[in-house]
Length: 265
Image (spheres, rainbow, N blue to C red):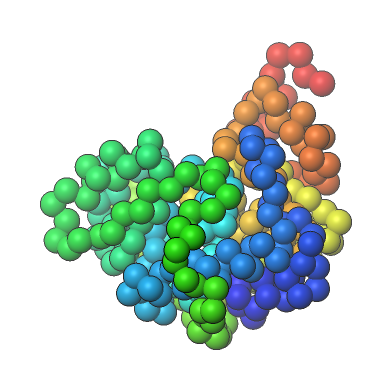
């Protein structure tokens, strides 16, 4: 199966069910809206000359649009390449060149770092600045509603991740749609998750954990995800409670911060 098939299936079976919530703005996205946004993005990228399999990089902090772009790029048959926001200039430059990215989505606050890293690259890469909190990033005049993305197969490329580069240059690791969906299925099955479940995702979407465990898994079992901009000790449990999350996804460092917070609830 593919990301495209899962989005289409959810939009058909539970169109008005919530897929994503952005707690800072209160914006919520249904599965029908996710499908529509993914189709629009596929048409938008096609109109800019991108072909199936082309790499689309994301240099964005967590947000409504970050999750939408992560899923939407794969839905359209392109390969999404999230960039680690903690990377140094040399690492960013290497990954941008090595990945053969054709276009990079970034935010206004991160654009200067991206432009600096792109200086001296052998080829031009289009940069599109977006607001991670915006409900829409595609201009109304772009006619993409009639565009039908190419049908995908499980072995098509979906996600390009890079290793940390601690022992040399970062290494690109390609994940197919089958690999991405398998990760979501294993998470869903292991925790017996269902459509009534909602996860709190405070891990960055440029990391495989945040991508697969808390963004793809809900798509597989029909649940939903709450994605704040970043992890915050101050309002973590309030956000979990306010949005009715039934499970959370954390790493040991986050657990330590929560346990050692002043005035634990």
